[in-house]
Length: 116
Image (tube, rainbow, N blue to C red; front, side):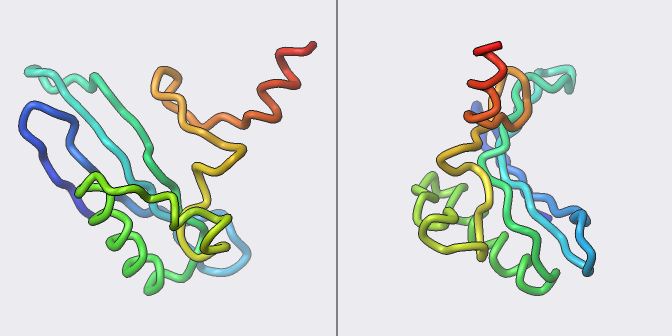
């Protein structure tokens, strides 16, 4: 949906995908990506994932979030505890993105698994 290259740093991306839902819905993922000189992926980070929503709402809100992310401003006020299910679903107080694993983790479930 959007891509913003940054010289000598990670580039910003925004894409949407069909969401698992009983009604037609999409979700967006915004983040950062870097490649080496050969085109090999060296860094991948998902900065946010939106709630599932209708495509027209998603397009407007996702681009708004992308613009804020590219300007390196704080996205906290768009999280669920402030905006409900209108903008960012993850991260929140429970879920975070692990750049090493390149996946979202659940703090609660992770702690339960460590206590086994």
